[in-house]
Length: 161
Image (cartoon, one colour):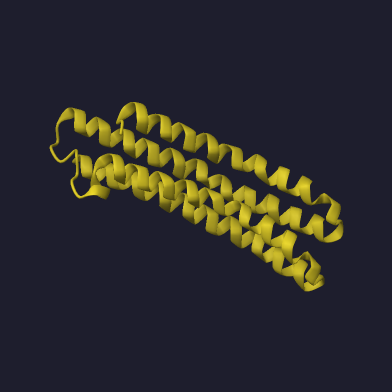
């Protein structure tokens, strides 16, 4: 397979999977936020913060997309791995792996949205639980951070800048 296919798939999977998961997570939390605000408008600030937490996985996907496009030269006007040499195919496969890592760990936005939704419900009943709600939701975020770090290591050591 041509290196451009690996590179393009890596970039698309990083941003696409993480973005879709973030959309789902924000949607779940947003439904809970709408209900909490309907009960009491004072819940808006806390609900908005908790609702936004699952969005960060899409940021990790976007960062990875840009890094993949940058190191491959696509985001500079000249694709560095145009020849289908064994070395270029391996570099393309590494970038595909990096994108897939971020995309799959970005699926953590879905349970994070569910946790945030529960946090929104808890905060609307007892505002003192806001910090705990953030901490619970941040636990799901950890997997996405691990994925981003892993992808950065793959990009830097496997392809370089």
